[in-house]
Image 1: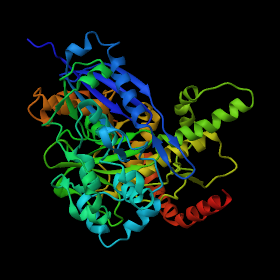
Image 2 (image 1 turned 60 degrees about the vertical axis):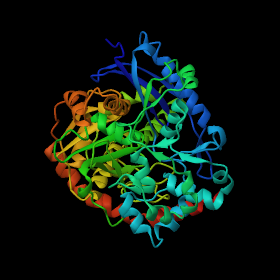
Image 3 (image 1 turned 90 degrees about the horizontal axis):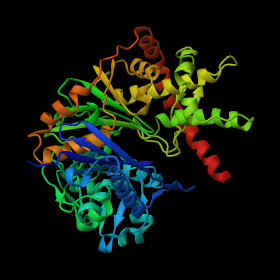
Image 4 (image 1 turned 90 degrees about the vertical axis):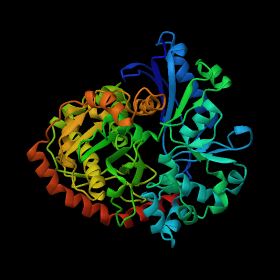
Length: 521
């Protein structure tokens, strides 16, 4: 009888690399994490050290062995997911060409503007289902090809973060159907598409695109060197999971067979998605959003993503923290987080408008504008900090509503929430009312790592299909639906047209402000 009763899911995010142990039935046993970092520049660059990212990944897995007895002998499979988009160039001897351009890198903005008006722009969008933005490898490679040719000339393959980790784990250069199809391919057949590659002007760089493998069907063995680095046994099957957005949504319940359900990941960024069949995808006129395949035949997620979600909360809490500390107080971000529900209760709904475009990379959903910035509208002398904080949370909700509206099907029947902010009951109430749907959360702690581990569970035959795995790993952990407050829904429905109208009027102001700031610099 085999004693291999654990699947390890690796989730390498922008700020933390996590390694999580699950039983074959989906029960979480333990987790280990390592902080990672990236560096940003005034030119819009956002770079991450590739070697350090692999070392952090291996360290997280080693850390897991400190909380799980006899881990290496018990691991039946390993699966890896990671932050999406970005460009991780690998050259000779599988060494990094340079630091990776991650999804926060905004240097390709001028290239995005040019490509978005090209003759093949609509054809590219209809194949990928994905709007072009500065985050993506396609636009970044196109920009590199014009402005950083030496980087691309030195590369033998262009990977994403999870692909880079998979290469270090297995020695195999590959990518998965999700990132391959929304960047360079077609979501209908999950293969590369010549029209898309032509639209990006990258046909002469096609040799950089790696093999596409389906992780629920294909695994590769852990190499001897990776075994030494991680403390696991050489030969352990390794699964290349899909991109972290869709793995988190899968673990949180985006696809459980219930009609018209949606899932929002309320993290530093906001990811809003519906599971639909390929023929149900709505391709909007603005050419924005993503279509990301699910590890289930013919099923995809239609996605809109805000560059900043809880990043807005982090900002306003930091303002409060800095003021308190500047005047001799002593407080922390964690201490202030505990007061969020109290501040929300002390404020009136819908007295201010806030557009949550606080990211210095602008916005990408449901519109693309690298110059977009946050703002308050309607301030009065009587407004206080609680009102500002509430407006920020409401702005996060309005941005989510904006994203679901762009998918063409109106409000979802039910909204499933994932991410740290979902732990706040007051925040859940606001998000549900803003979107116009009841809210349900999952007891699943590490949804991204769980989604990845689920793919490995199918790959090694623990479950015959992904639907069978979902029925065991996901559905039983869904909590009770929380109905949205009717009066709050009505208030936000009345406020939403003003939110849309003002954000449609602001782009010239954003552009002028960016130009003024650039000239000052």
